Structure formats: structure tokens, C-alpha cells
Length: 320
Length: 320
Image 1 (cartoon, rainbow over the protein chains, first blue to last red):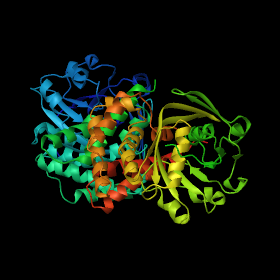
Image 2: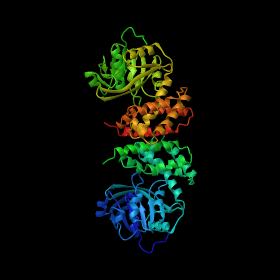
Image 3: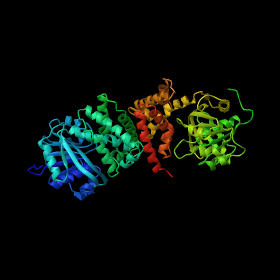
Image 4: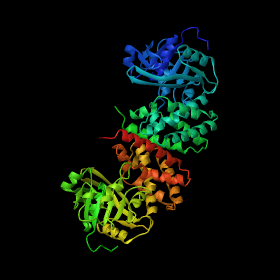
């Protein structure tokens, strides 16, 4: 892609954890004017920006133009792109978090996990274009303002609910210029189901199995059989939802995960640290889609039932 | 029952945790000569016996005639009854634990959880009568030599693999004289499946759900639906194994559990304290039976797969 905007795009990232910091750094490197809203790390980031230690890319520094505690504090008029990277969990009102910075021409970009996570935003901002983006990346926060990037980083994006647009291409071009591999997708819904094939299965199993990393999951007796069975159920829901997945995708994911570096999933880490897990976005919405379609999905339903128990337990024993 | 032996029976209990202490106390109260083999609490029990604080029965004291560290130390010739109350877990060789005290006329009594837990003992001691017993009891060890008895205590027993015998009746009469409600069963295999209907479902779910107690399990969203579904799978396996369960049993168990006092299952407590869980006896053997019979048991298989992961994880992070 060679298109590029004629002036520096103004980008506001809301919920700048590890994901937001990584893509914010890429956009700033390309020349965008990137600001962030962050909560827990506000003081550290305001003082020194983000320090991203990347295994593939070396050490990156990212100093946002504006470091804010609230979208209402954003100065200079509404951003061209408002990128949402907050976790989709119960009790976090994403609409309220972004409302004060959304202008009539702002494109809202969701770089978040899960299935059916767009309607809430689309309904609240019916005039705004929504770009839905799926990140394939291993990245985590290691301390205030400190981010570790282990591998990958590619981004699939498209207009919600489907199609592409000038803003999609513009964002894609900016990300590519910043070093991020981009896949533009006319069917971003299908792209979400592709990621769900991995996410809706490996995340819950890793948490429920006792906070296992990916290598341990495949080493466990019957681990792979259970993973395959759950993945087949996800494929069935995706196909019945109008998003048939390539028949080889399951084997690709399994081979890539088994042969890749061992790591803990985001849900396993959240569970271990008693943080809210993305139960509904990652698994619950998929289960409900399967139930609406009348499919037999006993493995996913069992994982979901257990996960809701674990989540409830987590909330009663949350770390301070 | 009014039969009673003409001289005090000699009873050796191997693995005298909370279960062994409770039933040992009952037998001694009746006049049997009860000795025990225990490991972790040896010093405390040798010094002061067991102190059993029972909600329904008050405080009981139980001083075994012989308190031993090994069955080989048992004096006075082989016992009439050797009662095994050790947990059925990987790495515990029950045959080795009892071999040195089993004489030709010794009846081996298994008061243990699970399905298909008798063959290993029956094969090692083909000349000995095996009595299989299932305890419905809420009891736990609260400290060295200290036992807390919350509720219930009834015992279902019969000859393995089926039928009744003089020794079954004798043991039953002794237990009844000691205050224990006894059900003699000609089909102890069916009795085991009855208990498995509860055990194979509530134990795994309580552990995997984040160490939930029974009340929390039923309060969790979709908790009861998951419990019912898993129980239906157990019913199917039991029926196909020649042990059809009464159709009302599931509702009885669910009502009794939901309306009874909240408590943590043995497996949840083991998981929480990083002790080995009875994964195979309680769930694995049932799953294998269902798989041999070609039944669709996806919920139980999912629970089993997760439980094996959790067990493996437990072993790598065992408490000292």
C-alpha cells in the first residue's frame, strides 16, 4: 500500500496497555500524532513514556504527544482515529470511556479480542465508522510503562460489519509504514471467528487447567484431543453464522502453537493474577451464537460454565 | 441385624485419615479390637489417639489398640478385617500398603471412593474375600489426630463383585452396633455408580470452578444445568454398564445438595491444598467405561481432560 495521509493523523488510544503501546509506537514511528488515555500507568508513562522491549525488534521508546487520564482531557479537537484497546470485561463501560473524545469524523478502531464486540460501540455511535481489528501478537505489560513484546504483531482489519473503506486503507498504510504487517479484510467478521478458533479454546483451557502454558497444554494427556474437539465446535458455530473457516486452519493453529514458544494465554495470566477475564467476549458470545443456532456444543458449554464459576470466584478473591 | 461375632473381631485400618478414624471409633465402641496404620499423624495418634468432634454425635475419643506406621508391624496374627481407607491416587500402591498384614482368612474391606477400584486388590489377593463399601459422610481431618465430622455417616456395603456373605453381615452388624447406619447391597457395583453420580460430577466441577463449595456451584450461572448434563452422562454409562440408576436419583441428589449445608468437596479441598486428587477413581474410570461402551460423554471427557491438566499442574507446585 502506498496511500498515505497528507497531514499527520491525530490518533488517540484509549486503554493503552501492552497492545495500545505497541501499536501506538508503530503509528508514531510513521509520523502520526499519537496520544493515549491510560489509567494504572499514568504517572509512569507521563514521566517517561513507554519502554517496549521487543524480542524481534529490539528496544522501542514511545512518548505519546498527550498522556491523559480521561478521554475528556484530549486537546486540539476530536482525533481522526480513536483506537480502543481496553479489555472487554463486565464492569468496563467502553462507550463511557471514549464518548468525550469521539467527534463526527472520528473513526473508531477496536483492537480487541472476541466475537460480537462491535455492536455495543456501533449502537452508541451510529454515525461513526467502525474499524474492527484483530491482533496476532504476544505482548504483555511487565511493569509501569514497561512492555515486553515476544513475537508476531500482525493486524487484520476491516470495516464493521463488512467491507473496506478509505479509512481502513489509511490506517493500514500508517501501520505498515510503522512496521506492522497488515491484512485488510472485506469480511472482518470471518477474521474474528478465525482468531476465536484459537482464543475461545486455548484461553479457557489454559486458565481452567491450572494456569497452563501452551506447551503444558499439549503435553497433558488428552490435551490435544480436547483442544481439537472444542475447536471443531467453534468451526461449526462460525460456519452456521455465515463465516465458514478454512478446513486447514485448525491444524495450522495447532501446529503453530505446539511448535512455537511456550507461553501463557492472556486469560491464564488474568486468572492467575485475579484480574477480570474476557469470558463473554472470548467464549460467552461464541457459545450464545451456537445456542441461538441450535448447535450441539457441549465442550464449549462446559468450558463456559466452569469459566463463569472461576470468574465469580476470582471476583470474590480479587487481589488488592 | 442381630448377628454378632462370638469374640471381639480384630480389625486393622490402613490409611486411617478422617474416614478411618470415624469408622474405627464406631467399631471400637461396639467392642472390636481396632488398630490402625497411619503415616502423617502417627506421633499424635500414638500419644493421644483421635479426637473426633462430631456435629451430630458430640465429641468422640478413639484410642487404637495398636498404632502403627506399617502393616508389617501389626502384632498378634492377621486381622479378621483389614479396612482400607487410603485415597486411590496415582503413586499410592495400595497392595503394597496392606500385603504384610493380609492373612488367608482376612476379609479386605475397601471404604474408598470411586468406580472400578476393586480389581487391583482382588487380583493381588485372589483367595481373600473383598467387601466393597461406600461411605456417605462429611468428615475431614482438621489437624494431627483431629477429625471433624459434619454430617451423615451411613455405609453401603456388599461383597465384591456382587452378592452378600457372612462376613458382610458380620461387619454390618458391628458397624450398626457402633452407631453407623448400614445398607447391605447385593449389587455393590450399582451402589458405587450411585455415589459416582454425585462424585464424578460435583467433585471435578467444584475443583475446576475455582474451588467452589456446593452452594456456590448451584448459585453460579448455568451451574445447575452443567451439573445435570454431566449427571445424565454418568447415568448413561451406569446403565450401559449393567447398573441402571433410579430415574429419580439425580433430582434427589441435586435437591439434597442444594438444600444441605454448603461445603467443599474432597477434590476441591485436595486441589486447594495441592494434594493428589482422586482423578482416576472418581472420574477417569467412569470416563473409560463410557468410552469402552462407545457412549457420547463430551461433558465428562472435558472435565476429565481439564482435571488431568490441573492434577499435573498440582504435582509440579505441590506444597512442602
